[in-house]
Image (cartoon, rainbow, N blue to C red; front, side, top):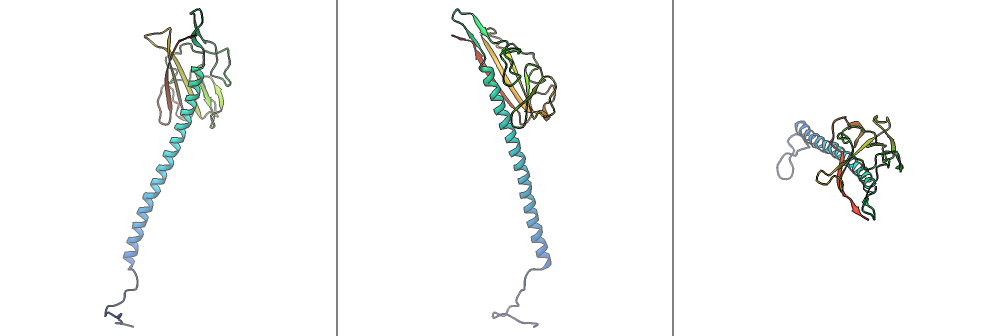
Length: 189
């Protein structure tokens, strides 16, 4: 019916033109692309956050082990320092390790036997030594340094945990890693 009008005398419109439909589709597609990119970023940040949380828990665990070793003076006033516990194995062994003996300079950036252990995806111990085991997900390194002002009575304890895939020799800080530092003073018994 050519020329038909509605009750007000205007021609009726029957929908959108092809150009309007294409333009609307492009707008929706651009919006969806932006939302998809936000999802990708959110997933990456969530994964990194989970890695950092796990690394922090593993660092805290080792710091508590280090702080639990004997470092005090006995009743007679003699210094007592655990220098034999092996914290690089699980469970920790009372002998065969380094205890709270001062560590070599590069223990936080290289896999130094006696000051490193390797952990699996759930934080379970999977090995120790200079070479990273194939099934290691995290590398946990620690150092023991006498405080320069009071070398006989205070120690600086540091623990660094990083994903095994990012644990490059000589590199001591990586994204998603955790680092803890504590000062340990000798106490009188």
